[in-house]
Image 1: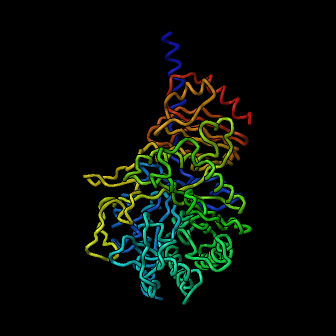
Image 2: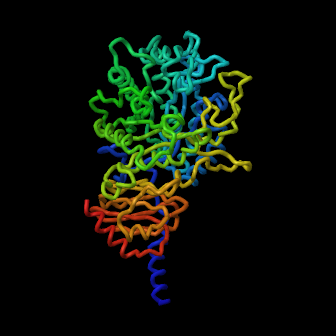
Image 3: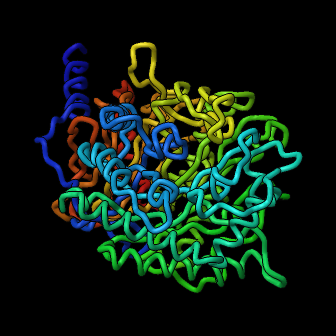
Length: 565
């Protein structure tokens, strides 16, 4: 009996610990092909990480995401170590690019590039985001309850005194603040050449970044988001939200695309956002959109959506927690819109407050959002309907200055903001510094340090990850597989392998660095990566913690299951 137990242990160890020769297939340029990101090895790539950072919206560090190069470096390393991120959305704003009309501030752009390189140095991919909220901070009175970011002062002058009236959320300024709506309307109608100036300034910024980066690092720059969260301001007579997207927003994107090409970014896609209100789940604030009247985007564009649960944030419209499959339909809609437009999708912002009166919902909301990114089915039905692509995403946000800011709101020395994100009373950062200046998470690590398919040698057919955070949503119908995983986190991936030399790579969270792997492919662990190599055809892998379950019986079940659909 003891000998049988020993043999069983030795067998499991061969599955659990298989060290790999250090080998990297990262560093190649991405392209959009047949509805997914692919690298130069032909692997399907999923981008996961965070926005860096909300500090770029403030004047505190003159529009830079971090206080210093060292701060950026510490943030990049902590993000990789704590979450396994492989990509960031990197913010910059027009106000600091062109503080005076026609004068580009290359010192600012050098600061942007230097901080950006702290992420590429860690092998983290980057896509730029020309950020704005409420058009510009320069529209707001020094005593205002709210503030914005985006346009420089010279492009925000001459508007009526701003006021949102009775507003309970800063986002209501988009529709209720006359100064914001007027300035935004003028931008889309190019009043006094304001849109011309923005596009030209963006082009100069793109040239600067490309010229400042070594070629191998520029390969890690995936693309650029032309403008954060676009909206009309107000509509012309007879115009609808959908015709506005078609007649004003899409021509702007085409124009921006041309500017990218002239700046040497022709091989990189534009990450274009639809009308910000298109997928709002608060019905009275939502408007139709999603670029539905645009016939196609193609592989030089990415369909770039945001997702926030406005009902959950209200604390009134959704009293309880998010449940299994709560956002499945919302993310299916994002996938469907990208497919209809002939491109891939990314959700470049999502999140929930980490502090405040609705922060008790944060674990459930984040779990449900990541579930929506990972799969098209809730956990209760995944095993019977597992098919679906994995969507890239960037959580809002990663700010090591969280709770340590000193922002003079609207340049008012009597309104010094130090709490949270220091922007419109938001608390979204997934990270902060502890008393010893070490980065620590504001959220459950199990939610953000996840198994995900960083690169798939072929095409992903199905994927799921049960993180065991908050609740268990996966209901495994295969009894031996259910017994094997027990209460441990686990992931399942099924893919159509192309048989290439570059492996399929899964990120391994801290909880699964010595995993039990059952797979039709050859598996090996390299640090925080699981490498899977296989010939052509359908493959599978189950990844979980070491277990006393019946491995052979579980493998027999999963082998029968993965070819049955």
